Image 1 (cartoon, one colour):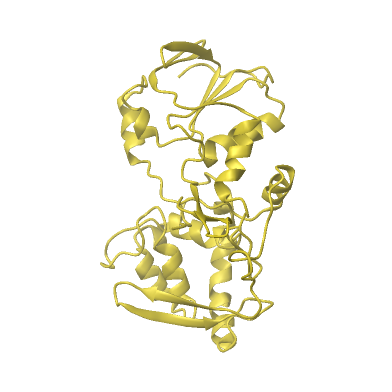
Image 2 (cartoon, one colour; image 1 turned 180 degrees about the horizontal axis):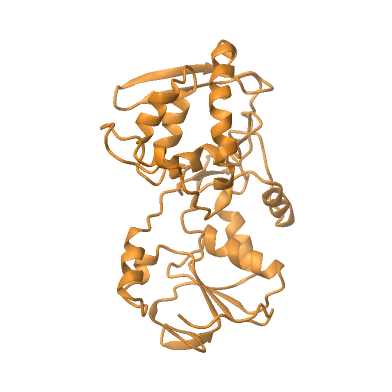
Length: 315
């Protein structure tokens, strides 16, 4: 590994990947005062797993729909960024179709091929109307777990689980808790985690860390559904990243052929040129770089274990 550099605003930083992670990292560095940040992207577009397409109507309207698997989570910083970039939030499914009364949502179990829960949403709280007693009991059981592992909400934070949980699968943990109402919701959340979801075989060990991550992230729902209302970005989620990239130094179609690290920093070759950087941030699946990076066997083994499976998906 190359030596650590001081936090000088002129530090030359390379970020590989112009998806949500790479562009948000570059924006965070820009706000901290760093002036020499370069984002390298192999594809011809920015956005990565955020991909917006538009449906052209007969009367000339363009209605965005999301094909990417990445959705932004609701937060004050994100709302400030959307406002700063001149984007618009709405509560529409499209022009002329505004939500007016409480909606319904159901959970469908593809294994059983049936709906396993059907809730009626309260117009203000979003809570089910008919199962408050059972719901409160379930939350009384769940809240201590959320408090215990609240640090998992911090990106990249890995919490050591107690020994009595390490041998449990998600299915076994759910069975122990005996939830009455929210188990279908937890099953839906667990099924989208990086561990691959709830196992059919209860003895199959799965990572409860990822399951608890999905629970705490559920406290900050995606921007699409906030406070009981749909709030999509009218211009599409990818436009957030397009406008970020416009004020950053982003190089698309960058075909990286070599990454070499040394005591004086890191040298990256792409498209027939080479540039020297002080710091390197990998914001793409690291396995893609194993063939061009001077990685040790231990690093390559670690790279192959990293998977990209976002909790929230859009189709």
